[in-house]
Each structure stands twice: as structure tokens, then as C-alpha cells.
Image (cartoon, rainbow, N blue to C red):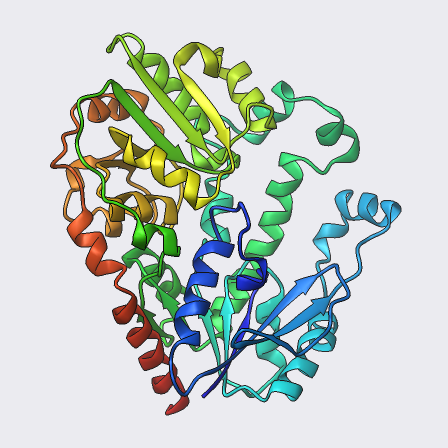
Length: 410
């Protein structure tokens, strides 16, 4: 069985990256399938480097899809409206079709709907499977928190990137809208999908009722399987969150909640992994809410590798996921797997991950509900037993192979 992974990520070729999302879980899945007898694996991914094609590293053949970067003038044109005409079908054909002809895959496993890679479905008879990640349509609708709209953001956040270069946060919002429209076309055209929550299944089938959906959970990064489990300890309230700097990931909610906690508890710390103090999102929310992160015991730790995240989780009292939209955040899954009690906003697919403890779900954007739930968390509020089953590597591998066999027989 010859399987071609098609992704924006280089997978295990970028092993050791500090990225806490994307590269980590996908390279873990790649490693899992490399162990499966009868599977020959290849990975195609876009890159600005002119790398050798078809070269084998480990047990995977790599096919870099070379895309030269834009000139400074070309970038400016793209920011000022060129994004409305995203890469055409001819581009993806020229890049990916030769890979298909060379590797001769039985199935193309496409990761995510955010790029133009799924366009290859229109140019090949090889069956394609889309592995759902985030869903851009939903993310675009939730891009700005409920109390902040684009006009408010434009008025309060003024800098060169936003107002002159136009390649800042509002550009990301507009470009995401264009990509979301194309995502709808991908979903309508594809026959096979792989996902992991009730929400992403409903999202897909509402747009493509004839599609076949396979529920397969995600394999975590290896260090989390090997790490010592969380144990309750006598300590001051220690909160950990792992998010990105996107507006909808909830840093503003963290600030507002921490401000409330300051009046409820004498001593606490809140470590936010994935966000730097200098990030534009941090500056915007601090100005908008009049709350400095340092004054409410919030530490912005930046992007960290798994080996540095694990000790922080092992010392935490609670893991908090504050996003306004999400499918199945790996950060929450990793905390649950270690046994850290968790609180999360009730959005997207998160209720599937928190199914056995719905009382630890809070409404999105409600700092009082979140602060109250944090203060009432107990060591028993962990979902380690559920997570151990959900992220069992053998079950995941068997589920993927079963999905491949079903597709190739239909």
C-alpha cells in the first residue's frame, strides 16, 4: 500500500522543531505508520528551499514542492489585494502531479484544508482523504472575540504592519476569509474525511452529506507517552495554558480571568506557552482591557519544545484552554494524557474531549465563569483514563490502516 502524505508540514524532516502544534503530531503519525508492514510512505510539502526530490530519509520518501518566495514588490501587491487571487490550480498541478506520477501512490492523505494542496483532487484519479485539522470557516467567524469587531481593532491597533504594509492581523483575517471560501469547495468535492470530534464530523456532513467520515484520534508527540504522570501536590495555584497569538485563541480572556483571580486568591501564577510578551496580540489586549499581563501574574513563556512543556504541566494545578474556537487542541490532549485537571471553553470539538466532565466546560469569553471553575478544580477533575484510551497508538494505527483499506476497496 503506497501512501502519499500531502501537507504544509515537512513532518519528521523537521524533527526537533520548537513548534508545539502541527509538526509535532503529524511527525508522530508519520513515525507510527513507518512501523506498519505493507505501507510505503512518501511526504510532499511546499518549501522555499530547492531541496532534492524523492530522497529517502528513514522510511519515508520526501518530495519538496519548491515555491520561490515573492519579491518585496510582489509581497506588497499580495498584501494589498493579491491574496484574493490565491495560487491557481495550475500551480498545484505543476508541483504535485509529477510527484504522483513518480511515486504512484494508491492513496493521497491530505492534511488540512487551509492550503491549496487539496486542489490536487481535481487533477488525479487517485483517491484522496482529507485529514481535518482546524476548520477555516469556523475560525474566520470567530476570529475577533465577541466584544471586539474589526472596526474596533482597526481603531485601537495602529502600527506600520497594519496600516502601511497591511500584512498584520487584519490581513490574516481577510486572507483567512478567502481560504475559507475555498475550503467549502474542498469539503463539497472530497469523498473521504478523517477527523476526531463530533463537531468536525457534523461540520463536514452538513456540507457534504454523501461523504464518508472516519473517526481516528491523534497520536501525541513521543515525549508525552514517556513522561511521568501528574500527581497532586501541595502548592499555590499554578495555571498553564498553551495557545498561539491568534486573537481567537483567548489571550484576552486569560488577562480578564487573571484580573478576577487577583481578587480571589493571594498567590497564583499563570504560564502561557506559545505567546511572547512582545507579540502584537499581547499589546493589543493589554491596551484594550487596560490590564498588563505582569500585573496579573501572567507569564508569557513563548513557544517551547515538548521537553520544556512537560515539567510545567507536571507542576501545574490546572490546565486551561481559553479559545473561542477549536477542533481538538493537541495542547489540551497532552495535558489530559499526563493527568492534569483541565478546564476549557465549550466551543467547537472541545466537548468531545471533555465528554466525561462537562462541568469543566465554561462559556467562551466569560472570565467570571472561568475564574470560578478554576478555583473549584480538584485533583479528581482529570481525564487521564479517557486520554489513555483516546491516544492509544495501536488503536490509532489500526484505525488509519482500516480507513485506507476501506477507501481502496470502494
